[in-house]
Length: 112
Ligand SMILES: [Zn+2]
Image (tube, rainbow, N blue to C red; front, side, top):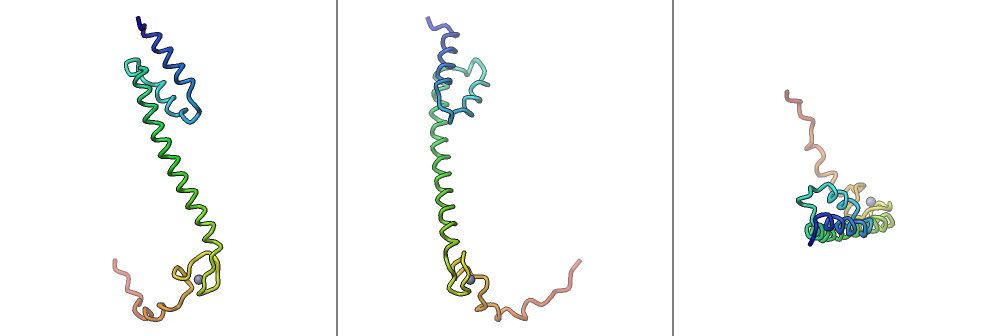
């Protein structure tokens, strides 16, 4: 028979059974019109959302790895100035290149 009401009921059962990570997409789906609100469409949307969620998880994993790296970096000691938190090549306290540019950067008269 397949009354439309039954399909809607199945849809709600499906949406209710989802874990909390689908909360945002469930809110979206509930705003769909009756024409779009079909069991098949919802499944497709959920599969797509699951892919997006996995992708986001990957991104947050990369971010935490980056944070770990930053933490480790704060333990690095610069061999040039002896301070922590940067490599020698990133050192801003170095004076190896400072003298060569002295005198070149004269103040230019302000042009209107
Ligand atoms: Zn340094």
